[in-house]
Length: 279
Ligand SMILES: NC(=O)C1=CN([C@@H]2O[C@H](COP(=O)(O)OP(=O)(O)OC[C@H]3O[C@@H](n4cnc5c(N)ncnc54)[C@H](OP(=O)(O)O)[C@@H]3O)[C@@H](O)[C@H]2O)C=CC1
Ligand SMILES: Nc1nc(=O)c2c([nH]1)NC[C@@H]1CN(c3ccc(C(=O)N[C@@H](CCC(=O)O)C(=O)O)cc3)C=[N+]21
Image 1 (tube, rainbow, N blue to C red):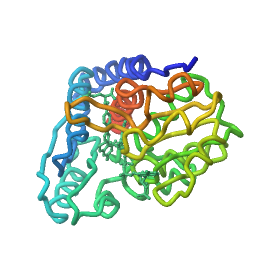
Image 2: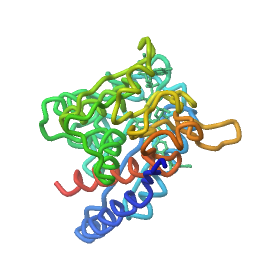
Image 3: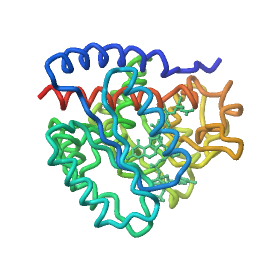
Image 4: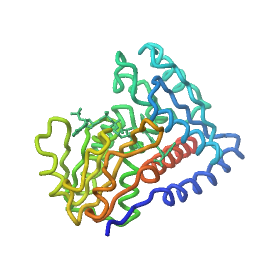
């Protein structure tokens, strides 16, 4: 039997704390405010931005979406990030990926004030994370850890495999797992034999953006699979990177998409905004 590790209830719990804190802050005249900068027409990003806006509203956090369009220049994006960093009424800033082909995420994210970097995108935040110093972790990577902890998956000494090495998800997830004493392998497109790695893993985190990448042939009976992928199908439905039907019944546990990592990510982003507004 494969256990389905839902994120919805976990997210709800986090949002309850956020709502109470947002109420307190607003009563003091410090309405928490999250700004989301978008420069893409990507469908999964649009879905994410909608879910952030909806969740923020419900929790009493102001959310402004700054949509610069898919043709925005690096100069335009950078000046927006600088203006938001300098605005005392803004407490959290996120820059959505993907960006226009001419723009570099890591370069632009360094324009986000680390104090407002609620998605841990500034390379400085990643460095602090690597050094185990206080910083905002990327919400998705932290959501992976929150889910594993909630379902009491042991990490110390566990073999963990992360599929994907992006700055936004794969790399920080690997760092967080390493900080918890897992033995971590990071796989990517040049990995020659993905199954050889994942079959040996206690925990597999998949963040590749490739539907159907991980199948029942990649996992064993004791493997816990965390599916970070959010791929929008032609009919508009959301699917992960894991072939759910083939892994279900083989692995020990699996997070669903939707209803797994996604809602926890959004809740943590709001929680980070509260932390920033409280300072
Ligand atoms: N649920 C959530 O909260 C979030 C979900 N996402 C989703 O997670 C997925 C990954 O996002 P992101 O990290 O930004 O994506 P990127 O495209 O930036 O990175 C994808 C990574 O996966 C690797 N990869 C791609 N294909 C394969 C393959 N066939 N075998 C092994 N590795 C592969 C790439 O390797 P290489 O480096 O060699 O190219 C790369 O490192 C997307 O579906 C995205 O929408 C993202 C953020 C949050
Ligand atoms: N800098 C940056 N950080 C990100 O974290 C980031 C990004 N860029 N670019 C785009 C991807 C995508 N992503 C999602 C997060 C949550 C849901 C989510 O909550 N989905 C719901 C369903 C929502 C719906 O169905 O509309 C769920 O999984 O249950 C989806 C997608 C974050 N991303």
